Image (cartoon, rainbow, N blue to C red; front, side, top):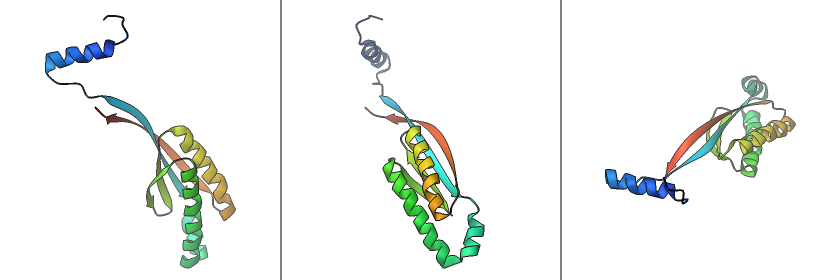
Length: 125
């Protein structure tokens, strides 16, 4: 391979000549999924009653969404009192989870968080 700095372009040209197909460019991105869950939410809901539980839960979601916006997370779904969000990298997701944990203590909540990293391939070209 010639050391001229355009080895990838040469390989692409050879590949197209041999196969008749132009290669598709791909980018790998790291996506991070955050899940939050309120500890002992069933007991709290029973103790507060439906109406008060809904009010407190809306305060909780408002707090979580504020932190998602701050750390550029995107809400994906809610399941019960759990929330799924996506981030374009792990650092912001981790910092967001820590802020959510700290902020919801003022509401009397303890929150568990889980993170999962996914390597995704985006095709372009």
